[in-house]
Image (cartoon, rainbow, N blue to C red; front, side):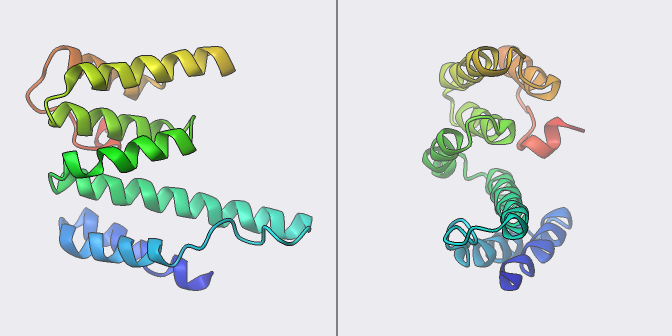
Length: 158
């Protein structure tokens, strides 16, 4: 597990410095080390907490990787992966925002708006709440057909 953690921080540093190729390489290396849910074959409360930590680190790395791909202009290339991630992590709003951006930037505005509507319905049905304000703002920017909505979820929150 410690191997997985090392490449993510350099990836974040590369991304924040605008070195997107290096960030991609770093995140790809980290993600290639992932082998599924940690400690899944062991039954221990201590290991369960540790497993949750590693799972969250993995998901955060996936989010950061997808942000970098969007910043690199690989909108069409990440749509299938983002659709899979939104199915796998049904309440993780960052993946939905990234999918909306990827679709919008691929000139698929209607589909981007449908992603928001599907998430809103899911959130209302399961939790009785609406999507986060940043996601609602992204929807409005898409509805207004702004020429330059945020490229990534991280940009939505600034």
